Length: 351
Image (tube, rainbow, N blue to C red; front, side, top):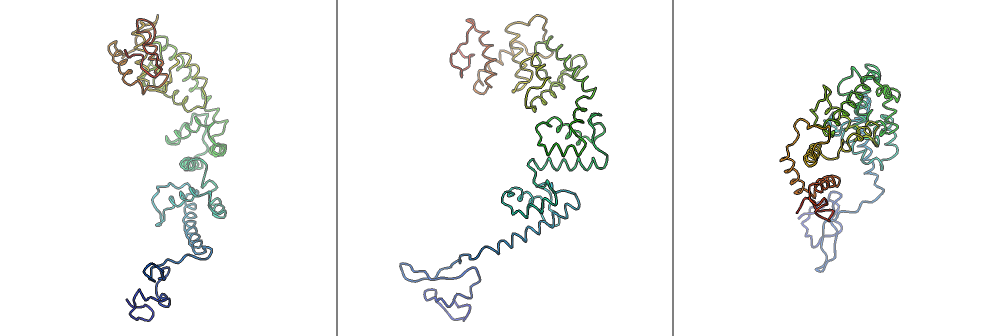
C-alpha cells in the first residue's frame, strides 16, 4: 500500500499520524492501542459544529418543494394535493406535503407561515380528502352559482349531490370551520332547513310511516328485505335509507323512535336476514298473532328448526341481545317453561 501524499510504500502496522491527510472526508485512519500493540483502523470523525450544513440542506429542499407548491397553487388554487398523485415536473408534491403534514408539530414557524399564505387549509384537522372535495364543489359553485337546499339539490352533478347530501346528514358532527366552508358553497343552516322541509320529502316520510304501520300490523315486524314493496311503495329501500341515517346520527331520531314503537328490532346491529328468521321461528312456535299473516318468502317450519340448531353451534359468536332473543325462544320451546342451562354463556338450546 502506498501513501496518497508521498507515494511511499507503507505498512498499516507502521502507520504514522502524518499519512492520513490523503483520505477523503469523512473517512480517516487513527491509531488504536490493542492487546497486540498499536494498529491502524478506519475512523469516522465525529461531526463538530451546530449542524449548519444539515440545516442548509433542509432549507434548500424546502425551498425546492415550496417552488413546486407555488406553481400548483397558481394552477389549482389550493394545496389539497392527493398523496398518491403522479409526480409533476419530476417532483412528488403530494408526498412532500403529506410528509410535512405528518411532521407539522415540529416544523419551523416560518415554514408553517409561508404554507398558510399559499393555502390556509393546507393542513386541516379533518381528512385532506374532504378538503379536496370541497375545492371541487367550490369550483362548481363559482362556475354555476351557489347550491340551494330548497330545490332538493336538483340539477347538480351526481357526485356533488351525493357529497352534499352526506354533509347535510352529518352536519351536526362537522367542525365549525367545515360548516363555514359549506356556507361559502351556499349550504347555510337556513338552506339545510329548506332541504329538510322540501314538500316531496315530507310526503315520502308520511308515505313511509303509513307503509310501515300497515306492514307491521300485517306481518308483525319490520325486518323487510330491500326489494320489499307494500302497496306500490318501495318499503325495503326506504327503510334501508332510514336505518343508514339513524346509524350516523348521534342519538335516536324522531322517525327512529316512531319505528321502534312498531318494532323494537327494526334496525338491529346484526343482519336483517337473522332477524327475519327469528320472527319466523317465533311465529312457528307460538302461532301467528291475531290479524298477522305470513309474509312472502317466509321460512318454513323445518327451516326455522335448522336455524335454531345453527344458533346453538355458533352460540359464542352471537351478540348478547341475540342470545337473549334465542334464549326466550328456547324457553318457550322447552316443556318446563324454563331455560335448560343456568350458565349465562352457554346455549339454552343444548341438552
